[in-house]
Image (cartoon, rainbow, N blue to C red; front, top):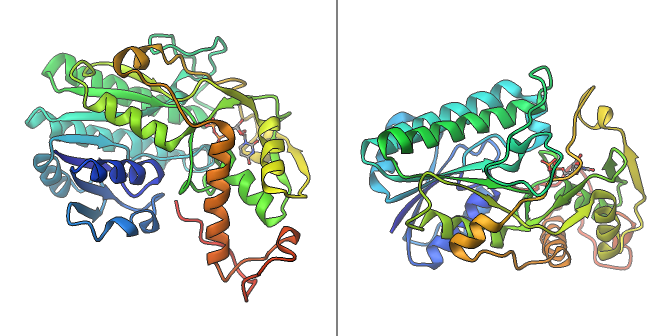
Length: 350
Ligand code: UDP
């Protein structure tokens, strides 16, 4: 099988590319490196079945050629992270909507199978958990930047379903809940890479709000299993599936666990949302997926627990930090071998 992954140099995309290569598939990726990183795919470049294109999905001719060449398209290229969304709403809205329009219209020409990566963010401010795929979506007002991400992804979903209903293009939608693991950067605000990094370098662990809000974290390897299972199933076109884990942890408990597992002496500090994001920022208190639909389709159940997730992220970030010659090392490194220089900032990758 030939597979195209837009956003293939990103955190999830690069793991997905790796798994398809392991299965013996030919993999094409398209990524403009706006939030992805070449570091994520360097190790794949020597594989003759791996092809990478550093360009945007808005490059119509290139995207058309790649879509024509492939049997299955994963459209993962999108704006990521709440911080980026709050800071660059124009980019978020345009990237998410325009990219999906292009991919779907090109796929429609030869009725190629397309999986559109959506997000749990579309459930918005819904308070009743777990979230089912056919639940009503509850958005905040348009004056609050955060909701532009949810709305742009909801439009992507409407469009994908319309292509299936009207033109019989086999489109599949997945709503990814908090997916974490090695290669995820904290640069765009994601909590686990951020807190782990803070713990390792001796900075304060920043818990936004009161820390009672909770999330369910999925290891990227479980998410990739689910993505491939859904994308390749004969009954998935026209459907929406949650992908995630249903084990909930509060952000305060998470920070405490990270502090414990890293052996960090950093304090945990609470930061008001207004300071962390923007005035009037609205967070979701809980975000739990109902996994019965995807479980019925492919027998999906997440396998990797929270400690294993955290251990894998800690190991990844320790390696990154020890590679860097540009880092201010904290007290936890005392007694261990330190790098020679301590200036500048670390290159996290994405
Ligand atoms: N968060 C936090 N400290 C951080 C980054 C995030 O307390 O350094 C909180 C954030 O406010 C949210 C939760 O952790 O309540 C998950 O944030 P993330 O951006 O990872 O995912 P999302 O909000 O999209 O679920």
